Amino acid sequence: MDEALKAALKEHTDRYLQQESLEDLTTLLEVVFHLAATHGISSVELQALVMEKLARQEKLEERFGELLED
Image (cartoon, rainbow, N blue to C red; front, side, top):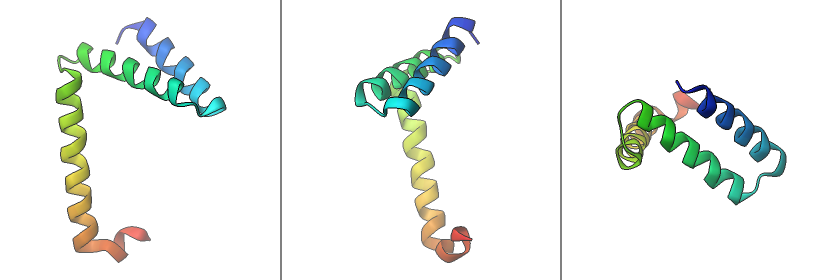
């Protein structure tokens, strides 16, 4: 992983945690999209993976709702 991207990820994560601004959050996402590119996937592909993961989690919650809350 690119050291500059690692540093940017930490910097913008810390800044977001301190200020919780939407601007910092969008900058953090931009860094994440650049990191995805280092793994050979586009931001669109990354977002699709996130949506797939969320769909799987929703299905698990529907099937095992009370068990997952513990």
